[in-house]
Amino acid sequence: MSAKFTRRGVLQRAGIIGCSLAASPLVTPVAFAQAPWDMRLVVIILRGGMDGLDVVRPVGDPAFAALRPGMDLSDGIDLDGYFALHPALRDLMPLWQAGELGFMHAVSTPYRDKRSHFDGQDMLEAGTEVLDSGVRDGWLNRMLQQVPGLEAETAYAIGTTEVRVLDGEAPVANWTPEAKLGLSPQALRLAELVMERDPALHAALAEAQMLSDAGLEGPRRGGAHLQIAQFAAARLRGASRVAAFSLGGWDTHRVQRRTLPRSLRALSQTLLGLRDGLGAEIWDKTAVLAMTEFGRTAAVNGTGGTDHGTGGAMLFAGGALRGGQVLGQWPGVAEAALYDRRDLMPTADVRAPAAWVMRAATGLDQATLERMIFPGLDMGRDPGIVL
Image 1 (cartoon, rainbow, N blue to C red):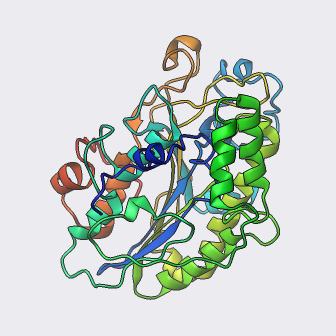
Image 2 (cartoon, rainbow, N blue to C red; image 1 turned 180 degrees about the vertical axis):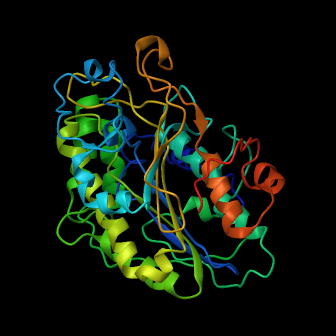
């Protein structure tokens, strides 16, 4: 790539700076990379800012319920006596019980304050410590560049844009499922531009995109997310060792009780599709990391949704990982404990667990991971996420 690693810059030059475009299921990709080790690593980017406080609910925190009036929190599925799982992920409970599903709470990239999808996703996929760092490739690609004996075949991408987490000098290829878009990219960009400054219209457009049967990652009517899972599994059963793709629909500004479950069901189906497609033997060698650009506000807004926040949650799954636990240092959600008195306070860098998984998968040393793969990262203590 000759341009700086930033989609925001590209969109600015095009005159398109929107919110739900960055969160849209219409611009989401998948890629694969072949590598000479046995563990399979799958990275899922949850575009739009997943509300980790609703997905993994801190019902044991006395301040939580007061932040979410009108949201029904009684239907959560108990995980450990303190955290409860959103009911839309009920089908994943067998994975939790088998120790093949877990979460890390109160995590974030180093990104703060502006809470822009574009900036947040750029930092998440570049794996950098600061915005506009000049880094031109994604952290998965930098990992591949450090591995000796890497074969030339590496990559498949779904969607209309590259998987930026796999952008870089290591070779990659593309794959896309059959899809018919009901709205052209030009029309979508024009709609974004017109609705950008109106929160109500903006939220309505984001929801319409998520509900679109034509969306590349929508869970409706057969869903390309299942095609992604099936194709990923087929490749990972063979010589491929790394896969990355994205799932959209997480920008829940309004009526979250209606919009979030759809995205969670798609995520659940994707994970189960991966497991079933890989088979028990390969699933036992697989690590799945699902990461989002930022969390959402601790308090619900006036339209029954949540706005862009800071600290959030990541999901990890697979037989190669130690699930059945909610990791992380919980900061609490009392007002004084919140970041800017509005967001969950991050207590860990979301890049750190990814680095520990990569270390176990590839054998790369900690110095390389902290300097080359994730510049500026302090990995800290091993969280024990890998078996």
